[in-house]
Image (cartoon, rainbow, N blue to C red; front, side, top):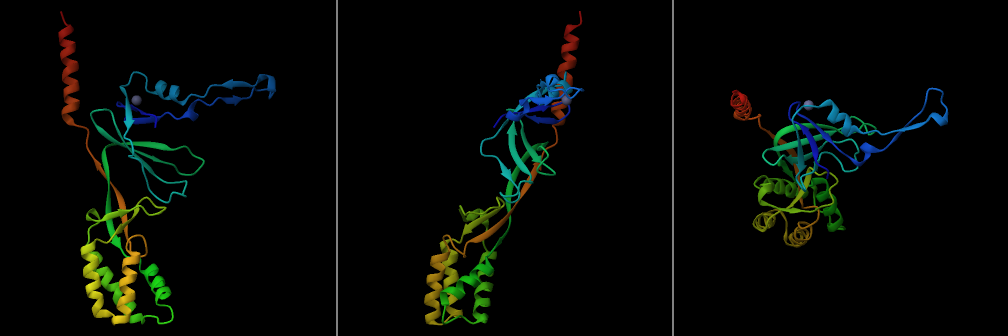
Length: 253
Ligand SMILES: [Zn+2]
């Protein structure tokens, strides 16, 4: 990814894309094709012009730091990148109001982290799968509910940070699936013995082993992007002022 240009003075960012320099055709007043001329459209030049005399620097985007909110199929969403000028960290937030508009960038001083806000079971999918697997001898609604409650209870004691992440085909980057660990799976099965009779338990045991790796028993973790904004260091501003003052004094005869 191309680096961003950062105007430190205005706290504005600009991103140079290959599209910035696509020539645009501008037609003359008489509407004659002869008068058509090619105008070099160069947004970079515009940005540099607008920020002439200001302190500019390049911000390199940290590899693999892209994070988008919303569905991958959704064209209008917010994107985040981590970037650095070599000393400080920044978050660049890109968003647009509609698909026709270009991305607008906002610069945030600091960093972001993705945190899990809730871990939940796939109740609907589990119920449907149980109906399929028990087939002709369906479980009573009471037992299905008891199993769902038990699963919820076990899940409440889990933390996403300690679980193995499953690269699921989730379309939402903020929805991540996790695998229940062995200890909790064993605990779950032990508790299941109290809910189900022997025949049912055998099917349930099979069901758990079958679906915990990549099936309906995966835990769905809802995540959110948390900004850790830092204020521009006061010392940094003071230091810059002092060094400028020193230079000024040094020049004096
Ligand atoms: Zn500026």
